[in-house]
Length: 270
Image (cartoon, rainbow, N blue to C red; front, side, top):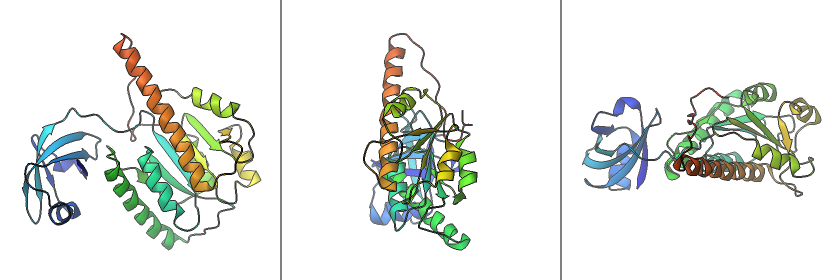
C-alpha cells in the first residue's frame, strides 16, 4: 500500500483530494486505478486508509475507508543533532534517521567538521535534505514528515538540545557501557530525546566539555564508528528501546493498568 501526505485543507469528511506532484506520480508512474488502496497522512498527524475513486490530470480523489489506523510514530519524539559529514553521508543519515523514527533532524556545524557551507550552499542543501526526508517518510510509511532544520552552529544546537528531557551524546573516547545502559533504562515513555552526534574529526575538547553535566555522555562500544554509523546505531538502539517500552505499556494496559498519553512531534518537549 502506497503512502501519501496531504495538508489538512485537502481532507474532507468522506474524501481526500490529492493535488500537485503526487498526481503525476500516481497517474503516470504508479499507474493506479480506481479501487486501489492507499495510506494517507495529514500534516496534523492523522492517518487514513483510502480507496482511489478518480484519477485525472490535475487531481486524484480518494474515498476515506478507515480513520482508525495505527500511527507509525515513535512514542518518544527523537531529535537528531548531526554534525555535518563530508560527501553524501548526510543524505544517508537523513534517509535512515527518518526510517528509524526521528522527529527532527538538525545539521550542526562543529569545529572539526570537514565540510564548511556558506549560507547559499546551506540553503540549497537543506532543501534537498528535506526532499530526501519526505521520500523516506513515504517509503517507511511514517505518519509525519520529519523536519530538517537549517544548519545550526554548535552553541545554538546545544541550547536547542537542552530543551529535551533526555539528552544523549555518544562519544568515542567514553569508556564502558554502564552509563549507556543506565541512560537507556532511565528513559520515560513519551519523554523527548535529543542525540548529539560528532563529526569525522570527533568533538573538540571544548565542545564535549560544554556538554558534560548537561547531557549524558555515553559509549557505543570499544570500536570507533564513523559519524554516519554512530547516528544510525544510536537511533536503532533508541527505536528498539522505545518500541519495547510501548509493548510493555500495552501489556500492562491490557492487564488492567493505564497507559500513558503520547506526544506528537509538534508538542512541547519535556
